[in-house]
Image (cartoon, rainbow, N blue to C red; front, side, top):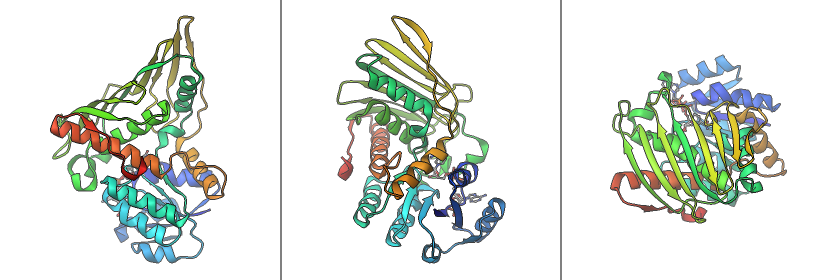
Length: 333
Ligand code: NDP
């Protein structure tokens, strides 16, 4: 498979170029909004073609798929161009800055018969799959609550648009709560119905929130608590699932690496739960490639990206208004 990368981004450089190559595929071309960035990225990563003209790159023969990792407000026009050109799309989260835009992308890909996936890497990890399997097996009984701890220190090199540009989709809710929404949906197999939330600027965000706490109600009655931040240097990450017959403690698992530890506690005692430690992004690309070749579906499809965005938007609205919000899933529901 030959890929066109759109966006000379950190996630592309640190994870996705390697993930594509680990799958035996080729990063054939790179398009950026800046000729200098495109040239620098292509040179650093050994990519043959680079430029600023997306439509020209899409016309290049032999491009099978497009990976979009620009800032969030650019995802819609870039994805639409790729779909018009008949290319399969793997798009970064959040899919867009509005539900209508995200839904448009997914609908257009579906109408064109193309694979459209969302790069929600966490559900590709062995740890999250192990937690989901434990929950589904009934080992902890009926699930009462899920607590997600995703308050981190945003690395210095990422303190650009994320902390001061609402137009580009900045703010911790668009950046991290959207991942947590996907995690909750993946682990519990149901979609949040209502949310209450608070947000704050606690020292890093300028014009956008850098911290949020929210509570989501699930159709089954399970309660979900989520905490996201850019300003917590020492909090660590993790999640806990508590049920009538036991609890799962997964520590250090809300990361980009296959790290962490899972402990299952029941009346019988405590046990460590092993899990595979494959690369999350290699797995995301592998599942995408399988879907393109007609075998299976992407790890997270377009509808998953629409739904995670819908939850994040409800969290932001609940925090802004101080009112409980119904999650509006639009066409994805
Ligand atoms: P970056 O902040 O690294 O880059 C975003 C854009 O900024 C680039 O696409 C590029 O624009 C431009 N840019 C890059 N370097 C420079 C520079 N030195 N000077 C000026 N502009 C520059 O983005 P991230 O990698 O952090 O995020 C990109 C997307 O990926 C977002 O949608 C984000 O939410 C998502 N993401 C997903 C992750 C995941 O695990 N699924 C992890 C991290 C991010 P241009 O597009 O014009 O090339």
